[in-house]
Image 1 (tube, rainbow, N blue to C red):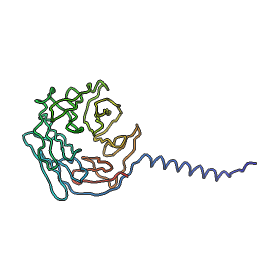
Image 2 (image 1 turned 30 degrees about the horizontal axis):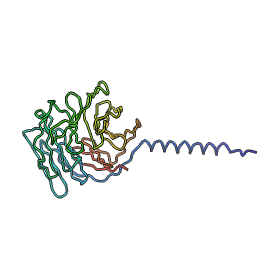
Image 3 (image 1 turned 90 degrees about the vertical axis):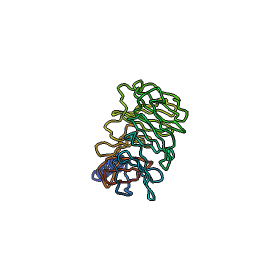
Length: 271
């Protein structure tokens, strides 16, 4: 003998089951953050915040490193505008002057740690597009021939180079690179290539409509039309931020998101 469940009961259960899964799926598509702080920042361009809460930013051709106790500056007017700043190693801060095909490395007090590294004189290629740090005394370089090179700036030598980028993916035009001590990522407007520390190609992933992008965990957090998203394994999640602010310059550091809207610097923690 079977127990007959009234229709209204089964419909009610069905409704709650559907509601549960709808809410679950909806929440799974969002990554939430917690607002931490907001502060006034007079900067032309915000670069980022390091592990010791030092804020890096640019005004004109001058780099600033600011904390609660002091503000340090560095400027080299003869080299013009600073294309990129990387402080992944806080004791080896890398400044890239693209117009002069030159890198200068600073210590944690913004004193020059090396002589000017002029790639026109020190290498076989004349025009470097992007620079990013690697381990020890090495730099990742992407030159005008679209090859990635690992360059030892102390020994003034190229350790190895890859095939041209288009060998791995046709019609790929690099717009930026990022790296850590294990990987280097090369971004275009339509996708991203990943290489390991030995320059071996790992994979290509489609990534479109991004304005700023940062590797995060196993995927990427990127900005698209004033909204942040996290892409992991071809699954896209909205990064929910409150209070809302317009995005000018962003920086991702571990579980922190920093956003500079042109006037204020906002800090959020990823939950």
